[in-house]
Image 1 (cartoon, rainbow, N blue to C red):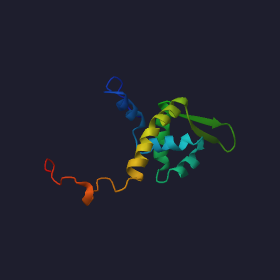
Image 2 (image 1 turned 135 degrees about the vertical axis):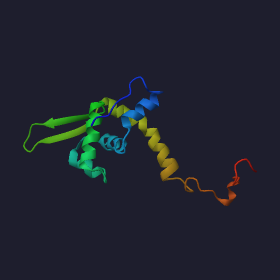
Image 3 (image 1 turned 90 degrees about the vertical axis):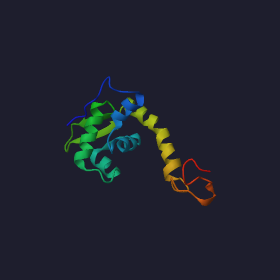
Image 4 (image 1 turned 180 degrees about the vertical axis):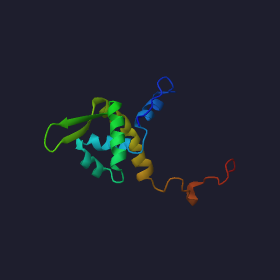
Amino acid sequence: MGTVRRPGAYVCGVDAAMDVIDGKWKVLILWALGEGAHRFGALRRALPGVTEKVLAAQLREMEADGIVHREEYCEVPPRVEYSLTARGAALNEALAPLGAWGRANVLNASPAAGEVREDDHVPLVPGTA
């Protein structure tokens, strides 16, 4: 089951990029491979909660998109390593500001996002002072 692309149907560059990284695990796979090449098992351990089936499918899609390189070694036992292509590294760099935003506004946010304190002077009903 491959990803169906919508060439010509994109509204903007963000729409096209989101089509490439769409999927719960793809951004995390990019992050893990940004640290260096990984074998399948090491990648699965680096992403707790992902199943083998989903990880394999996401890696195949990313390989088809030119984001991930799959290197097979003719050894016994067989060995396969996954790494980022230049295109994948560029995508990882483009996602770095998004990661910084998440750290600043979600992970390290104080108070909790959406929480209103007494001294914030925020009207409880929009349009009132």
